[in-house]
Image (cartoon, rainbow, N blue to C red; front, side):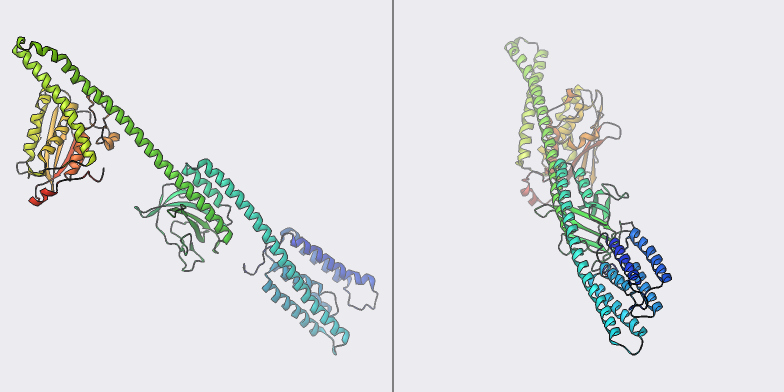
Length: 596
């Protein structure tokens, strides 16, 4: 039925009301011009009053409801056909003027329906008029009666043809005017959108809200959503929506749509394969989901703009073109917003690195200044070495040795971190006993453990298999972790060392009773130059844990930090057990771990 109805013409009902009363006036004029006997049959006063009352009600209805302008021409059409047939039968005369109401019905047909339907209707009405006249015609047919029949038949056809042509012309002009008005509105909408995007191009939330506001200028849109595809989760993330049931961040299961050109898509009624409306559409008024993909100018898929529509017919070309323009601008704006977010993250990383670098240089300056000051103070006393008592000599010697070792450690760590960063570390791996490696690291740290009166507890099974490691590098890993535990442990604290077999790896853990590592700092604790927010007096240069992490990664293991069950920090790492063939030792020149 919708395809039969002509696009409405504004104020057409009021024009027809005027024509209706002009026709009724024509019925009354012959009674004033002619006296009996009249050449045509005239309505009686009672009939004329009935016609006036009937058409008055019909005129009021047409004036207020405007059925033709709203695309509902059936009621006035049937009302005029009924009036025309009833009056013609009541008059029992083919020479009456009641066919005027047939002309009004013809106008309703021509102005209310599309031209093909209107032509058929006009032909049917002309045939109905002819059939009624022939049925009521007295026999035999005289020339005047035949002339009247032919004139009425041709008049109905001519009026219908001219009305259809006029209606088609007006309709096309009206459609052109509406299209021009809609185009101007779309241009204004796009200009407004571009201004909004220019103001909020770096704010994805404001961009999406501007998109959804513009989308609802398309007629028949009930809900709209901007969805972003998340391939890792196989779902569409809601970026913005006008549907109250969905909030940004919700993930919708993947759904099927039809797309012939990989630009526009549709699902629901009216699609070729009758693709069902997606499950997330809970509104029963939505019969079809249409939309357009959001892409960058180089074709990268960013998401889709999905529209829940009340109509099942496809979107007209002008609406599709508007949505495509909208999608191009929106895709570009979203891409700019994402690039801006990445740039901000990169700037934040650079600022963090610069802050860490400043901390490093400050720390290394402090670490170098202390032993150098001690050496500078003690070197002049060496001139009186022979005069010193033995206890003083031993104290001076230990102080010189400790500070030189401290300088050597800083230089060694700096060089080692550079080699690890450049991927130039070569491992010389062989089966290495874990207990022996831990005992050697403990021996190297004995002076520090003794100075703080730290207690030691280790749990290493006798049957623990050896690990496939470079002994010197394993010693560096253990020294850094144990030195870190000793540095942060309180006086007379306890350091616990544990080793366990886990599949093809040995897990080694070092626990202390220090303050531990805050949760928010754990992702960065193994970064180069990073130092924790704990007591600044205990800060180093931020290379120990970095070197340990890189060396563990080169061995094929992993390292992490967590809270110790008894309180404090717990650093654990894994190394593979020594079940490799001797030929594998030739392949131990490793590049930097791919995660770094």
